[in-house]
Length: 136
View (cartoon, rainbow, N blue to C red):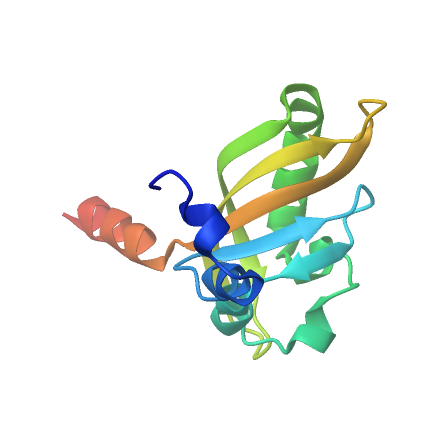
């Protein structure tokens, strides 16, 4: 980003960049409650903002993915990040969406877990390629 560009962007432009990003973004409280979400993630999953915010993130995970997230949690809390975590999300219509998640832990002034920021990328295409390769 050219120097000073962030000063030229208006708050609404920054919000639009967040909301219309090519991947899903969400923030979670330490207890796993969804604090913020962008429009891309809502569109991927088919939820309305009011049906997603304030709910436990695990509520939207397939059962086997809850176990994967639970297993990754100690490493995430220790290192402050997780990359390429493959999970299956439950969409509003009941279908399952494979995604990859990357997250960063944000600590407060006392170095306590304040919240986490995460990206979510649709993983259907990669999974389909993997199946094709396996079938060959």
